[in-house]
Image (cartoon, rainbow, N blue to C red; front, side):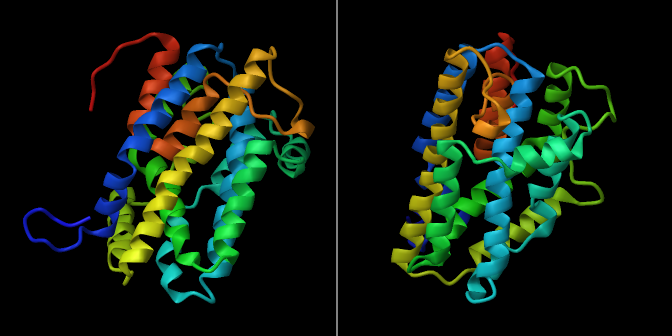
Length: 271
């Protein structure tokens, strides 16, 4: 895509945002529909957290491994935005602080949708164009930083967690100037030297990330329709308030706002 004013290619991050606009809207509707059919539960949030902890652990380990052989992927190296460790803390919290149980949940075979997600990340890293990881990874790391403080407060309310009690580390960035880190991260990605074909391939992966998460949503809705949360060993994620974390991790503040507020029937109007 080119700027209408200058004819120059748009900055990469603007290109990705515009290329994925339609998929983003569809993803929000999918998440909202799944949530509307299901009751909210801390157990549900726990299961969703396990699912996304698995995804983030794979993504971030992959970035660290692949960037050594592909210098351009060094632009994705941003530990301040990484979420796997924070999600692991949340998994432990939502297992009552039982770290052995949390470790067992994270080590259990993943659900089909999560397994597909993990396999896709590996296929990008091991494929002919690892630079396409930029499309997926940038979405997954920018979104939670974009609206995490607001959503953390909403989730603390919906999950009835006391202030400072823990359980929502995924939305917390202690001792980090999030706005400054996000700005530098985007600047680094915008500075990447990509061919037109690479830009299009990266954009395709930005679109694909919504499909991957929608598959988790569909799986979640199916689990809810069967009457509840499957065992951790089966690795099937549940539905309800837990979809809020999935929405923000993929779609940012707008997606999670629609999911959360749709599930409780509240109409608010902040931007």
